Image 1: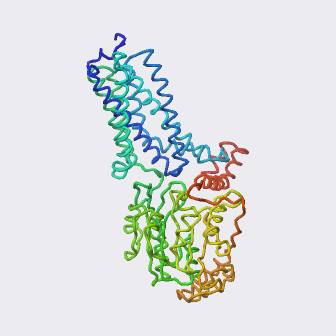
Image 2 (image 1 turned 90 degrees about the vertical axis):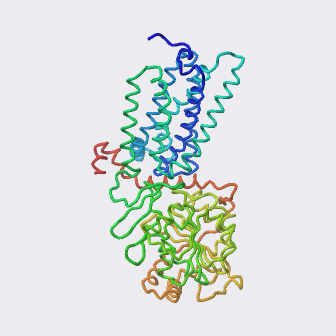
Image 3 (image 1 turned 135 degrees about the horizontal axis):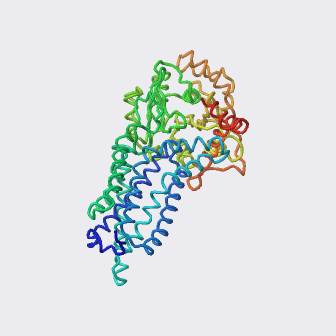
Length: 562
């Protein structure tokens, strides 16, 4: 076939409309892939600002390199066939991501977890994003320069051509931003969303090559690969190794996984880290941090009302209803899909009102006060920064009755200078006063519960209803005090006994120093601090396997994990 040097030699390109259509769908596919990248990585690495930064930075690098090389290739060999072949390869690559991407992520994570000592999540997320998303987005980055070369017929209208191409790309990018977030991902999930946008993109080179009757084999192979991955990809989920999932799906905010076990049903929003909510099939304690948090109603002067920020599927509400049946409980949960699952799988009390709202925004709009406020809001595995600042905890304090208690699930046991727990404890102490605070680590978990009490107002040592003195929280180190209050209010001998054990785990909170990091709305680096804590946990868990790898090699490591 003769060498093609002019786009005008291809009839489909003579009107230039097809070039603008190509630019439109190219821009849409780039943004759809970027949104899809965040959802593909989130179940494994979280959707924190750090992960988003890695995604955006990596993709911008790919697009920048694509623009540079796309311009060079267009100048050296202005052949539109090669441009549309690159688009075809990019479309097929994106179509394969839902089928292959999750396996690559776990392979990369498995290799790094035994070789990397620090910044595991950052490095693993960066390498995963680079391997999975850089190649197709690099190819799509070459599109604009190539189309500009083919669309320009004279220097007199070159600027207008560039402007129209830019407008088409931008409009496509706008749709590629809104459609995945608000339409396709909530409706059909991340995997099918990849297939929808890659399929639309694939149509562009297929129409081009069919119109000129060229590269028929490439078209056939691309179509077969797309159809095959479309049939197979939706059959496996993010946690493809799980066999007993009652539900796996996605919402606007989260990846959601419900697992049905013999003694409990659990909800996870992250494949690799932790349990978000749980319901026990038999009445009693859960064995999780919710049990320790049940000390809050006993620490408060009264136990008549409770607010739960981060309701989840209502685990804490169920525990309060079980042991404090007369308590009025209110919940706030930002994810409506989680609230729906709570009623379907977790027996959430039907008479507990749950507002679908951001916890802080809900507080700002409410004037009610409570005896207990549970703060258990997490964005995957990190605390939302707006719910970790002095401004937020001041709002919580304002919504407590005199003598009321706030309990915060700090999630990760991370101590020492510069740790997230030091920052959180210091921040809360700046609002409540360190003498009004206690912490308790939860056995056999990575959780720590922090209790902060609001002064009763009548006097530092005054109490009501048998509660603990407002400004002397350290008195609860005497287990009989907490036990007596618990039994008086609940009549439960089992909870009374457990509260004695909780009291033995109480620790005072040190007064913040001048060097302590106090989190504010302006400065709350919770993602960075949280990642450090996770690195520490991963290092502790992976340490033995690293030693085996160093001493016995890969063979020894494989034997150890079998």
